[in-house]
Image (cartoon, rainbow, N blue to C red; front, side, top):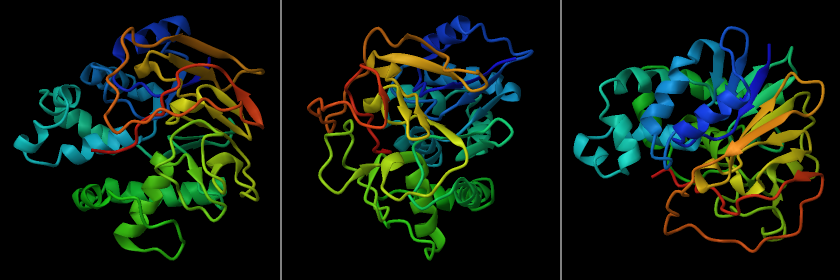
Length: 308
């Protein structure tokens, strides 16, 4: 038996199939953890979603920002849905869309296996959050996503503020929690998320830190595997394993074995042709290698985080 975590798929179905073949995935004995962002930009989002859904009995999936965006768009009118890119339209207008979207809405913001010693999130944790606090806050939002008021939550989740405070209530609290779990890269020591900063460590202004390297952050009793930040490429350090290696940008798709005695990383090439770069996407100068971990050369594109 092997337990594998896999980075952001972003609608790259054929690439995902190649990776499963390379790790010799056997659903009779193996288990998969998917780090979120199953859909968008890869051109095969409906096929990817169907594949992961077919593996639902032997896998764990956390929600990424692109997954939440798909859920939000699915609650809009058909005319509005036709304005999104063709890749997402392929999901929205598929005959099995309702089944797939209902299943996706039931996925958590974090997955924890204390016997294995791992937590999985899409993006990151607030500096003051222990793994126990993170799990507690995730469950708050998950309960609302699965409840009768989920449409209100999906409509009100957009926006960069407010910054996290345990005193927040209502939709502002939900939004802050969602932003941390699905959009975080850099933040201040007080936990203010710098959404506009998307490049690799070294490109950010003074006073901002990668979320996992904020001075004085809470001690965490689990290793954390995450995706979301393709500019990091494969990064291992500070107790985290970041495995979004830009498959959709012609980088690689990465699998990390969570139950291995040592480090076991398996990769396959990503899309032959990179996804179109959004107009608001910015290129950052390549910085020096970040301290505190291992960074491996790869795609330089920072993953876009606008949900629309």
